[in-house]
Image (cartoon, rainbow, N blue to C red; front, side, top):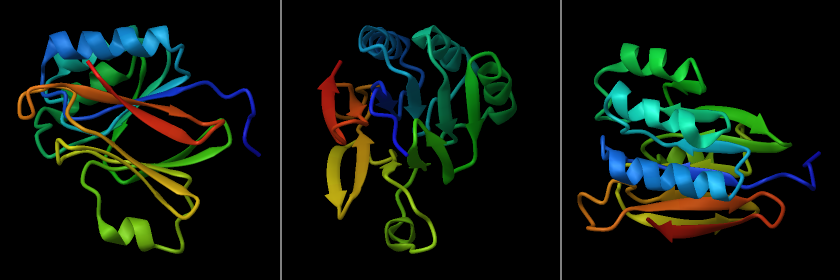
Length: 167
């Protein structure tokens, strides 16, 4: 049963050690009073992960293909959240979430895995789409290195809508 009073979920990916953009994302998530922040991979270094502690809420993340210092990232996350190999499925406020760095078509068509929200990254291209009752969100690149602009997403679990927000 979904909690009707559920708060926003902040979503970012591909921050690639850009501390300025990570801090902007953290500020946005704090302003939105997020109850959870999800990072879909490619944080890169533990010093960048440390910035996520300032969200004021738990942070759950998956490793991306550029996250080389994994043991350090795991240690950094211990104080404020958790990072794992994806795909990672968990519940939050009655919502089933599936988080992965690289979207795989098997995840979207798999009948055994029930999820309400799939969060992915890797492409550096922001996208929000629905597949039936399921929502797929790629927040794009928070770093802004490739596209020239960093983006994140806010997901409203009550309305089941996501908004891409430039940093």
